[in-house]
Image 1 (cartoon, rainbow, N blue to C red):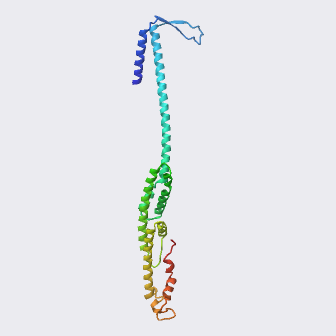
Image 2: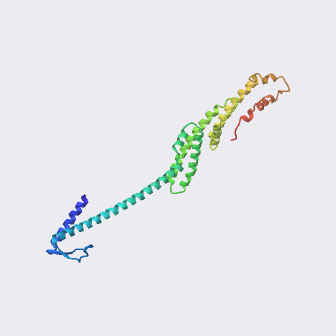
Length: 273
């Protein structure tokens, strides 16, 4: 409303100046349009000069207002089109950013799995970290080297923390393998497979596993040597020391037979590394 009022005032001033600089006739001849009903000829009509000036002024003002409204409408349409284009561009950028994050970043549940106790989800998240670490090399060969280096450093930190947690878990799990039967869980087998690229950690875990199994086998052998079976069958190995056919003075035939019979030799290494 303020703009239209200002325009009206400007138009009024222009017309006042035009009226002062021109000499108007006392009357003007205005031709009226013919009537479509009676088809009468056009009759000239005398109109007061002041009324004609006012009518002309109103027409001129309406023309200017129409032009201003047209300009404002065109500007508004252009603005709407620009907003639509900007919205589309933002949507495309959002899709590209989402695809980038899905390819080069861990999901929240995967990060949570790396911090929780070792489960199947832990290994899946660790495989995801390795895959991202390999895929980020694509960024290093492009113009996104800074982002590639940051992602690689972040994945390296996740990988080191995961290997440290996996190493400690595997050690604790191996320390519990002191029972007579060696029940190696599938998670421990996969943990050892994952630790193979880290020879130092893998060696420590294997040493812990060997110490636990050696302790179990020695304990069971001592029991078989002195106590025999749970119900007295088989008899203790020491009971056959006087028998030259079953135990030679210099030969460990009876202990080796016990190891093979009980199946402890293949159970010392129940998996292939």
